[in-house]
Length: 560
Image (cartoon, rainbow, N blue to C red; front, side, top):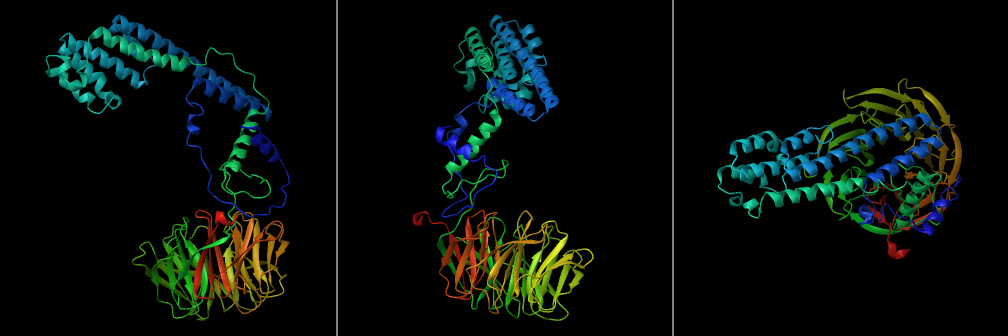
């Protein structure tokens, strides 16, 4: 790595990340097409270097016995490799001298038994020599006993077929694959050269003195790798990010800055949106025209229209596989749709409430075995998809429930209501275990972070609030948008760093989670923005509006 990347890597060694102000970012990493030629991972020298580096790291953590075990196993393997090299040396000499009984003994050793490419080449030479000496019966034995099981090792397609054909020919040159056969001596020399090349590859680096192992070599190399990933990104934040994991490549959060497409077709305001499957190729929307539509997010083409509800669609959700869609409506029902075939979507069942009041919210539990629905009648219901019935109800809100979701662990339902409270319900008992009253207006949405540590709530007091789910303390408030009227305006997370939400002023707002600063306002809608959802795979945001349209937003590098 160059000095710039080393310095960058050192900057990553911070314990408290500074607030990040995003102006551009992305999810795609640049890759070096020649990176696989930087070193040969199969080289014995490289393998030993890796073992030494891992051993040093284990030792630094105090795992001394583990390090000793690693080195012991490495020495056993080294012993086997040395014996293997010795056998190849002996095999080369025996082939050149034509000592085939000795060749057979060497090939039967434990160290060559699994080297099929070597065995095939050696037995092929022995077979050809027997053919050349007109020893057809012995040749057939070699073919049947040794070459047939190694047929997959043939040098090219059809070689084994021609080897079989040699049993019927007068001369080796009669077979197409062996027209250039120039005698036993020359063929042995070529095989010996092949074995010599194997020896040189295996021995390379073995005689060199081991270099001094620099302190903390593994951590230093990992820092350089992370620095390379960050520098190779197409988009960059203003501050150096703190990388939380080494299990995946670093990928910065995208902050959309431009409209990508407008999805037109609904005949009423669009209340909600959800992605169909994780890829983000398709997006669904629910509208006051009583329909759910499914769109191609790239072409903006409407692929399917789901009809059956008799009133407006308040909320939708889709399972992770993108095969089933759930829609909540003002007609007091949740409809379950099979959307595996977008040309023939089908409603498979209808869940009707006894009261018939509007259902404002529908969501799935983490296992996708139950549906959570809530609405005007102040009741939250848990519907079992297997038995096809409501198995639990949650009562306690004083006014209608605007939104209800389960936490990532699946043991709690979290709900927001027009009574200005957020309530936490035990999934099994149905009892309310905690109630929060901090908003000064109706709560219009609740959402949990992927980690399950944070809760985001939206309210008609012109604020979105972030809560610590462990302590239930309010962490911060996001302002600047408008949310005071009768509409359900919702907010959600963009990764771990950003918050996105709609507004009555027709804009989509994006906030930095830590600093609470507004990092982006997306304008283009001509009416209230009710909902906005982010897809990390495709790097797009989709918003639903009172202007009867959805819009997708992306990062346009020309506007940086």
